[in-house]
View 1: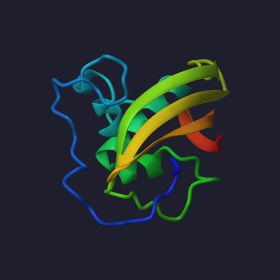
View 2: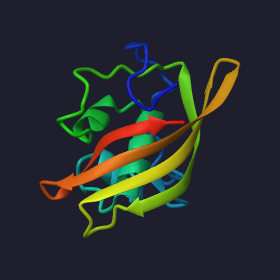
View 3: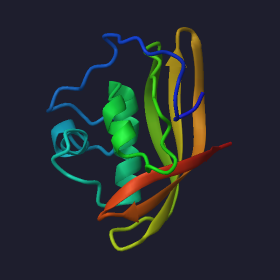
View 4: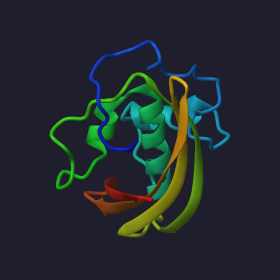
Length: 145
């Protein structure tokens, strides 16, 4: 499993946005409409690398491949991104951050994202690198461990 491209391009009803007044899938504790929804809609930019990481996780939960592509650094972004509708992301835990603040140029976010696919369960552990350019944060790449 990877937080990059997955194996299928089919759409499924599992790719739905949460209701605005529901908790955000990113685990921040905030409501979706006040957390990741404005970022996914393009109405706001993530102020930190961690916020971008959380919003990208929410994009995986909701199947928003457009947002994932738009926030991936152009120098490392794949040509296409196909999400697997059978894979459900079930929880995000931020383990550590290095830099990545509003004034930083680079940042690292280490996280564990839980998933299920049919009867299979697992967790993705990744150290994601982010860069700030053109007045916004970009996902650069990640090392899965």
